[in-house]
Image (cartoon, helix red, strand yellow):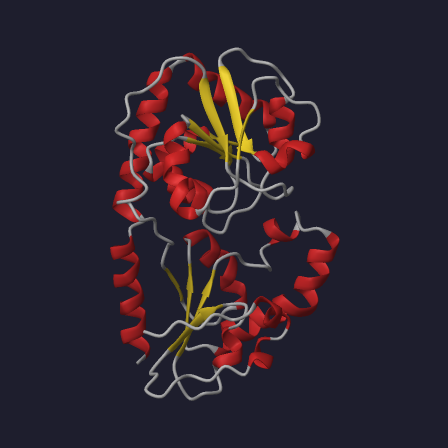
Length: 297
């Protein structure tokens, strides 16, 4: 297998990169934003979609510049990939359903995966004291930064919120007991999850929900909104912690419940870990992709 990275600037027009498959290449696999650019090499081409730009739920929360960019460029590229590639995959059943009206072929569902040997429950003895709530998103509206801002504006003696230090200026008034941390690399994230009790993920759109899968692999309950593929990733039992979209008081209530009854943290954490081990491992994903490759070769 040979991996070639497309420089970010070529996202505007992938064919301009003039990438050519090396001698001996038998198949090309790319994301749905650029896969169309490789369909003229006479080789089977597989496109994978990670977040469908034509999904009405996604369209509703886009900024005006993002909407223009997707309408003029990316949306057209995705349509070309869905129609021109030999096979199409999506990282969730939710995405596959949204893609059906735009894709004439069957969309294979192959979820993303988590390295469960790195993202795993901590062996450290559980602490007493305040509930530590980790926000691992970005400062965007889509990821629900405004929800974090609303939650940390109020004091609660039993709860401690953690977020990145470079988000401090965007929080406005925040609790005196806020904890800030530096931006973490992928290899540092398991240790960060281990330091906290619950992960806050108030996203308004997720094509999969990788942070949720990581947190669950570490046996950390995920509290957020029922949107996109998040309920699918969390599973029915863990989905009890997902509030209706934009219902901030319901998220607050779920956090308070965890703070009052720590047995809930352990119970939902165990269910989350089991969910990931059974559904979102590297081995399962590799086997599924190999099956797709064998069918198109």
